[in-house]
Image (cartoon, rainbow, N blue to C red):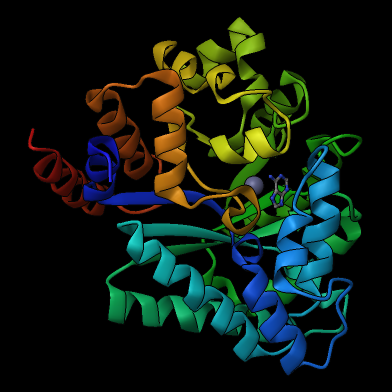
Length: 336
Ligand code: ADE
Ligand code: ZN
């Protein structure tokens, strides 16, 4: 283990951009397929893993939704979430804000209650047994209609106490935030915070719309923000965090090489940027791997790494008191 790896591992961390369906390792896909009597296109774990080469976001999403079809019962969602929590523990993640895509499952006839029930039960057990605190974010799929989103929001209403925020993910091209303004208005009226995937493959205009129309508290990815100096100013002045996902960006060809990642420039230009793993089972690494990859490529100092870790707690949806407690623990671990 290199010094840098040891240092990154030693810091207690928060993760703010993580799709629970994106943590399903090929081994678990096969296990659940067998348990549920579902035929897969691939005949071995290796064959599936070897197929993970993506041309762009859509190419990845096609795999991701297909794999999601092995999740049928409450216990499946529990097992998926528990497996992630064990990885989170290994990565010294002490707080996680998990996104889930209910429409991927309810569209196949899986009850909303089975999806959220399994995920929430595992997160509650993770808090008890592993000491990992959590928030839950319901993400709407933007390739589906706003009407479908409204149906999903109604299904979520009885579970509102379990859900902190709503999000918007899936294909960014052709599905700008503007299409979901009414849905997000309604979600906010109900008391949900909002986050939005924007500027991953799309232009800065999508980030503006996420802020102006969908009132996003955080922007997921936000890579294209640097193209617009006014937007950089607004993100800095209003302290709107970006949840960046370096390995995801590399694997989905948002960047061509890690050295091109905008994270350091975002920091230098006053944006509160955070490091996250997005869909770690598909992109070659969990949170520590994302830190290592970007720290190596951009030659980040230990101080910069500590700042990124602190940013995640500051940008999280926990209370100010909880933030202070975690930030103190980071400083203690970092020896500052
Ligand atoms: N769903 C899962 N991962 C995603 C990503 N990187 N962008 C948009 N939607 C997603
Ligand atoms: Zn994402």
